[in-house]
Length: 397
Image (cartoon, rainbow, N blue to C red; front, top):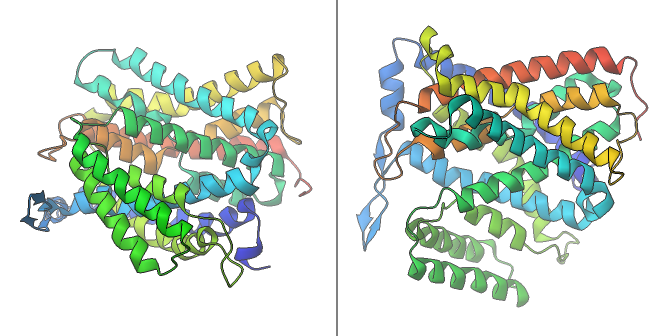
């Protein structure tokens, strides 16, 4: 069966495990370079400036900007595509299927954030990192499930994937609301015109991709000038992409998913890891308040929040555990959801990097260390617990 004909769950499982391995390899390379004699050259490379400053547009930016605010727009675009497709034909199309993982995702965001603030304090510069342990990296979660093979019940896979989609929505909401500088309503108005233009082009069934790419770039530039984080453009464009079949029987949504998913998994996310996972490891950093708060938020807060909100939903009879999933398996899956990595690193950059100078303050390195250590512990802990609790391979539905 081709990837195009598989349901959203099968399509995700087809790409993510291998992409997760590449992502992990790039993270290890970045860590190695950041702790080698090449550390200064490695850091300087990501601060090289590219672009121009013309016509009122300041696009003379360091390379890390083009990765985090440019390439990652494509990553967020695929998230938008996946969210829309799940809503139209996947697990999110049935409200009763989304209630439990939706509430679990909410718990997995609220509890880690509160735990972070409780450990770190509600005041001071480090408090800005409360959103970091809220995230889940679906690539590593699916990769770990793939290593466990057929013993993982389909109900758990669906639960975690749906939870991750809702988790992404939560992260997008935080980025849109919290990480917004002084807003330029003129720029937002221009961005709105660009989005309306895309809607009109789709209504008129204009098909050449370069037309949409050009308008999309203009919308990105408008958001960049507006003060709203430009990666939101990716999500908006993804959700706006039509699912109406074309002459070849495929919709633009399906076509762009198939084209971009390999590039995101095997190029964009690994480049992001190389750019952001390079942390100089010092023994004292493990005891830093920010690092500890992120670690505890991911390792403890994520499974605790997911389990508490899930069990509350079951007790109140507004949700039920999936087939093949008991309390132990649910808690183990919650541990896997503590793998924050990509989105957590992205949120760390937004939390602690000055939006004007793009110079990392003191809390950024400990925050990244907390993400890397916490995500590693969550992956190992969740994988080992699932291996022990699941026993014999489960029948696949």
